[in-house]
Image (tube, rainbow, N blue to C red; front, side, top):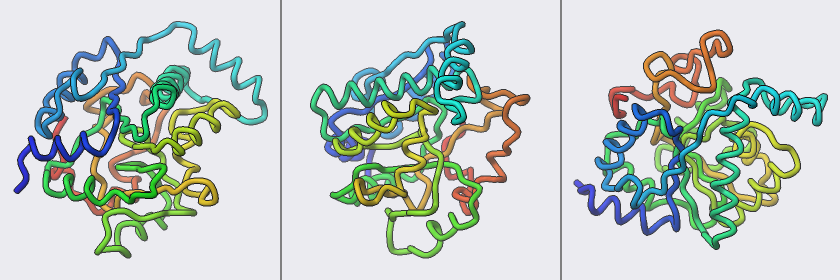
Length: 255
């Protein structure tokens, strides 16, 4: 069984930068992330660059302006999606501008899988030609079961035509960063939209997803979201996510 020091070495050798996005007022989430990062051998604010977002009272106005500018396309449905998108864009653009070849990006409401050997094997088997990696995600598409069941001997697969929402944990190569930036420069929208459409852009980038979810997002009823509320989001992520349909939530960290 691998120990956390060996695992941290595997992770740090695979990425030039690891960035964690959190909100400055969410000490609860930061405490949980520190605990989980320590479990996999990564030190908060040392091995992982922490990006602190802040709440902003003018997000509704900004959202309205973007939606009017791109009408009939709709960029955002919830005001705080604006900040989330801007922060992800900033993380990716900064990594690109500073010469990173591979960046790993985390959000503060994820729950890592507990199996360190599996996590190590997933990192070690990352395809060399990747541009976008998805370590978790959400989709109600029943075809997503193909990802989970048809490749028992693989940890990573391409998935054109099976589109998965995900910004909780993803990685980008330099070409993946270029794709993300150009997508958002053309149509600035929710943070995971470029990742959602990435599998259908096989001519320009290589996108892979893990056949076993490595992270899941914390239950929104346990860890309240600053973006969504019960009034604005009726999705039951615990029952409607086909990509997580075969997991046991006990295999992941409690939040």
